[in-house]
Amino acid sequence: MSTLMTNSTNSTTFGEAFNFSGIDIPLENLAVFGQGTNVQLNPNYVFDKDILKQLLFSLKEGENLLLWGDAGSGKTDLIEQVAARLNREAFIVSFGEETSIRQLIGGFTLSNGETPWRDGALLSAIRVENALIGLDEINMAMPGSVAMLNHLLQKREIIIPETGEIVECAKGVSFLATSNTNMGVDESGLFEGSQNQNAATRSRFAGVHVKYLRPDDEIKLIELAYPGLDEAIPPLGGKSFAELSVQLANALRSAMRDGGLSLPFSVRQIHRFVKASLAFKDVSLAFKFSYWNLLDSVERQAAGDIFKTIFNTEVKD
Image (cartoon, rainbow, N blue to C red):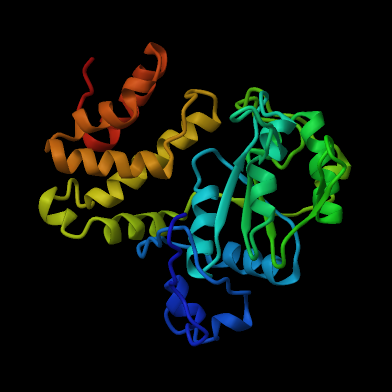
């Protein structure tokens, strides 16, 4: 069993915990603390204040919350970094077309001639006091899983089919779901396998639309994560490397929304690009490594043109 970490105390303010200067409200007035977290705190994580306000309110009031938005916009990271600051354990339970009830709830296993019960990921998580449970890509959940989820979200319990046992959620358990859609029709057509969840499921959530960070905030994120970046990679055309990286990211994201690209330039991809640029001393090679080589030939041409416009450097195969 891993050792839990403690990052906040009763005297920690909202501003101290979430890096917002001048907001001295005690964090304990806004959210419920846990006894320790299993998430490593990222001190350079940049929060959107409005999204954070809604998320903390949901936790305080016991509301199930859907975080939906573009792929790679940091929805899962948001859950984990909030958990880290509230000393709460986070459990990310993923859904997909192949996710079975057995994987979620558990089942009997064969061991040394015996058949002990083994909890699945979701059942194990609801047993933990003050757990933050991320229902990841809930839009991909199939009907069998959804029926079980509806009962869990409404009654805060899971009924084990094989035994009839009722397992109630531990005290303070919170549910935060993530999705690329708002659980309705995928109007973009980008997310193959996305299910149109019914009103019974959607009505069990409040909702927050999570977008990519505002350019200024994303630039701040890069500058905090990579001190000395400007000295390592000189500005180009009066713009810092962080500014150019965010400009590139948003241009690629726009192209994806317009159907020209199939892969988002996510927050992870930005970090990968910056780290590779620092290591390789070659932004073109770093772009190929972090993004371009993952595209098909038509998309590589489109992405290469965008990169050349911003960095004035051609990407060659």
